[in-house]
Image (cartoon, rainbow, N blue to C red; front, side, top):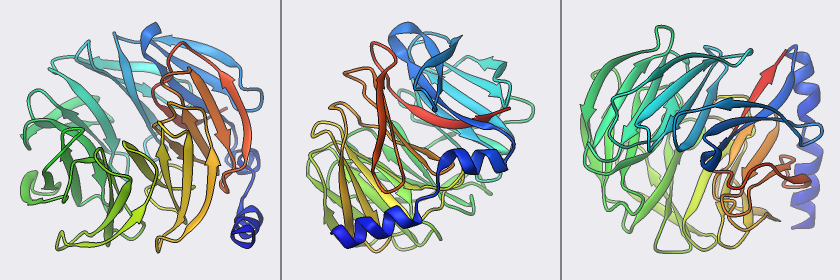
Length: 321
């Protein structure tokens, strides 16, 4: 284990140096749902440097460098706000959702996919024009989304305790299949290359790895208490990376796996740190219950933990000039 963590430490690249090469400084965008605000947190100091008012109950935030945009989903307001990067100006707030929850950008940044739990719909938004292109019925409870690295397929968990996963062909804009998660699925993500999908659960301390083409479960890995979230990184704003990061917010643990499923390390985090945001060599995890944001190195080494809001739901990385 020590040897694996040493290897990870050698491979870790400081985020500031990566951002400097890209002509900017990395910041964290954090949703503070009880304050109806998107917080901009300076990653050098951990201080909140800007607050952007959002429609009621902002929960999920995503960024894409491909089209220099950020998106915030406000569930209670039934709205999705698109912001332009790097200036973080609000481009448009799109209303008309019943209960939106999760947003994900296509790898090329042209499209934003948003799930609407109550209507069971996937809404496709054109990023450049900030307009709704189509709505696809995918199944009641549509929640977490996994985007294949080539953008051609989506896996959508039908609920936070899903007994069914819907597969969507993005080119034909229609449902092409379903997958039985063999339990109550919570979160999911495509591994680099797109051959497998990792699925976390709400009813067990395991993470399962599925064949993305056949939907067959290949193996399961021991993880922390449910529900867990999973993401691959750390790479800037694209669904690739060298490691799998799996959170267990109830345990206050972040597990780091190799792409083959070998456990490389376990990092302590504040209790309530369910979500994880990756980008520019950074690992961010906000605590919903403690209102903290924790910044870690790619090997899981903690840099700092700061309290930024009464409740910090989600976090994403952006690079500002």
